[in-house]
Amino acid sequence: MDPYVKVLTTIDEEKKTVIRFLQELIKIRSITGKEKDIQEVISAKLKNIGLDVDMWELDLDMLRKHPAYNPSPEINFDDRPNVVGLY
Image (cartoon, rainbow, N blue to C red; front, side, top):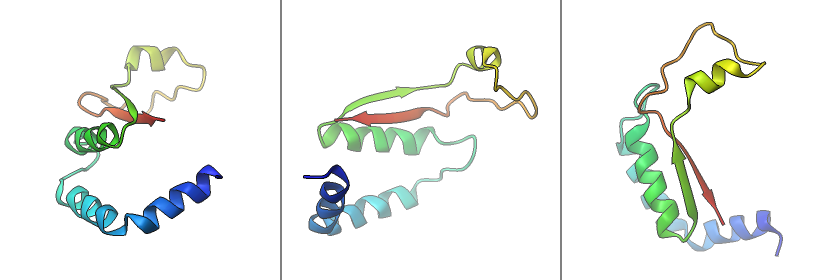
């Protein structure tokens, strides 16, 4: 089955579960600079559905070395993890 169709079908089949999870996410205060709490909830959910999860904070020193790095304005990435779930 096409992955796109599979995702949409699963969402339809699990509509109540999806809505409950979205309600849980909405309750978490997540604003720029304070994303860690919501990312931890998302990470746990991804693990719970069987995905391999990688969660990391960006390394500003590494970013500075990238040719497309824009130093203005410089952003603090502490406690602002990125989360990826892999199937």
